[in-house]
Length: 303
Image 1 (cartoon, rainbow, N blue to C red):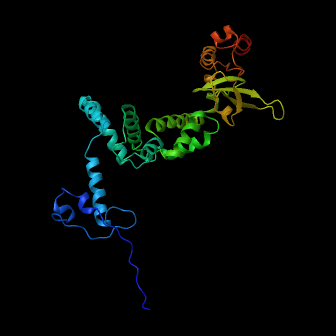
Image 2 (image 1 turned 180 degrees about the horizontal axis):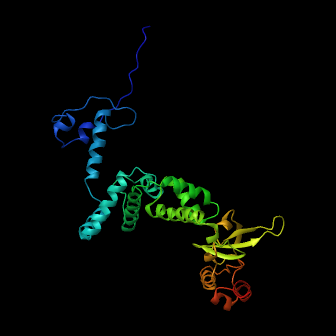
Image 3 (image 1 turned 45 degrees about the vertical axis):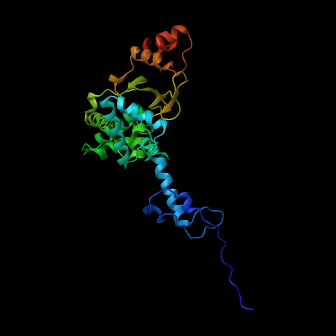
């Protein structure tokens, strides 16, 4: 017997019926001509005309605005021109952004980004433009950046400000203009203190000191050398008992001019709800109002 070849199963396609009424140029079916191409499986149309139908359908659907789009068009027409300009400005910056800011990268990672469904609100626009302005400020020349980084590394374990700025630099790879200026003020202050003759600087004795927003306590080592050393008061959250953390080397930079005043102590206590002399939480009503307890006030300022 001669081998026989079994043809692939086909069914009558509906290409002519589906495209009825469309110009011949679209599908190549003139008048009542039929399409002889096979339909595979359970399809209704041949492969070529099926692709045309899908494209045509998507075009028709995309040309019909939904109710949400119509509302947004009306809202845009009624929007203040200045606000519309800000929104457009923010969208352009976000579309072209190639930096490392986490907030902007999160927005760009949104699955709707780049489509008509991605919306930039007024608050989002303000945040986006704030990032743009901050990053623009970092382009200012920073010739002493190396000095600034040395100070940050040396003080990141003992100074809250240095720790925060150092963390930001590691994350974003830059300092803002404000951060750069603030760090250099600290660099210059340390340089002045180191260059000043020893007789002009009275060394810090036992007691409490305020440097920036930090409170330090200088005390003598009970065991061992008996030398003075400094500890910094760490209050992570207002109303939580503070912890004294060893601050290596700080005792050598403190001066009598930085001694904590009673008014500064009261201000700290009212702000954090913690006594800056002992680190305890203020619970007595009079102590809360005064910002310091009577025992610590007497010991620190009237002893």
